[in-house]
Amino acid sequence: MINEKNLAHANAIRPNFMKEIINNQKMRTELTTKSHWWFFNIYLSHYTSHPSAPFHKRIFGLTEDETIKTLLIVAFRGSAKSTILTMSFPIWAILGEQQKKFVIILGQTQRQARQHLVNIRKELEANKLLRQDLGPFKEVEDEWGSYSLVIPKYGARITAASMEQTIRGIRHNQYRPDLIICDDIEDLITVKTKEGRDKIHQWITGEVIPAGDLNTRIVFVGNLLHEDSLLMRIKEKIINKGIDGCFMEIPLIDNDGNITWTGKFPAMADVEKEKKKIGNEISWQREFMLRIIPDSERVVFEEWLKYYDDLLPTGKGSKYRYVATGIDLAISQKDNADYTAMVSARVYGYGEDVKIYILPNPVNERLTFPQQVERAKAVSMAVNGGRQSKIIIEDVYYQSALVQQLKQAGFPAVGAKISGDKRARLALTTHLIQSGKILFPRKGAEELIRQMVDFGVEKHDDLADAFTILIQEIMANNKRPPVYEVFLA
Image 1 (tube, rainbow, N blue to C red):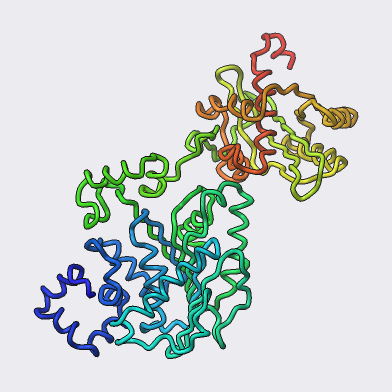
Image 2: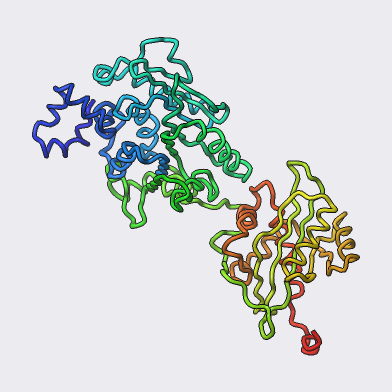
């Protein structure tokens, strides 16, 4: 039962070490309660079919470090991350020196959450050496249900829950959850739309984190499925010191081309064999190489975007021409309705020399018609230093009424005839984006960029529509006028 392969190095340093562990129960229990790594290799080694990798030892070390309150582990499929963090760690955290009293394991669905509990229950009931050394575990039948296991000897509980359940205010006796493990709480469906991603983020920040206490540890296990997924948001917060925590990422092949688990994949031929078994390049890149691969439907790729830090001058002698705002109107104000979007840009130069600087902080709100009129006026003035500037509105249905309202108020509003569907219109801008003729602000246009990059999968695309209305009109008037017209201007 004890993993002799993983512990062989210790035996080499200290002769007969394995024999001591096998024959000396006191030594064995002292060792395993202090070290999660020893605990796993002595009591749960039947889960190990290959020699461990260096990253496994690092993961065990992170679980032992109680100063890490938020831990995010992203690792390739089959890396044993869930076995270590979702099955072994909850048991050791209670039986070992950390003496946790209330562990919650969260899955995306009840079925997933219950399966984690089933695996733990099997070990506590059937693992003879574990029961002999650290048991008994099961004393009251009623306390071992589908969603909870109570271990009276340690005054502890392990509970499985999901997004379908509320854990607000949950307690075990006087204890609030002191270890929360979130395992694969996202999938490709939930991360597909911003609405789905925000729902999971709200659940974690509004339900899960507040359920804990000051010293509660939260562990996230999974893969990065989207640039704006929950795990990606947590990763960025950890890296940018927005929260105290530790992030660890383990692809099957590291940045230097090395196999990270040679015990399981000794050579590249073994990796290629696994890749052929998967049979899907996107799945392979996502699940094993930890790369977020864009959907085939994507129109704009994030790596195409070019950014600016400072706007070019607009004074005499510059190539500045004008500033304009494209507007995509929405009629309804219902919660599931589209937004009114307004995207502005400064235009410099003509023809092949044209440069379009998208301005930060576009409007993206639900507005009544009177509010739309006033907001369009305010934006037109604000982006042009207090003077009226060009406003471009799709000339269709009731939207032409806004054009007339603005013209009557003295604003240079035009109705633009838009052709093609939304996807086609956005696609027509991509050569300008790739070539750097359209530049985006370093900060302040994140939602616009998100809608463009995730066009077709996001529920709302109003900013992307306003962007295409603006760019189409700018390019329709991009021909350099005759010299006398420039002189008169």
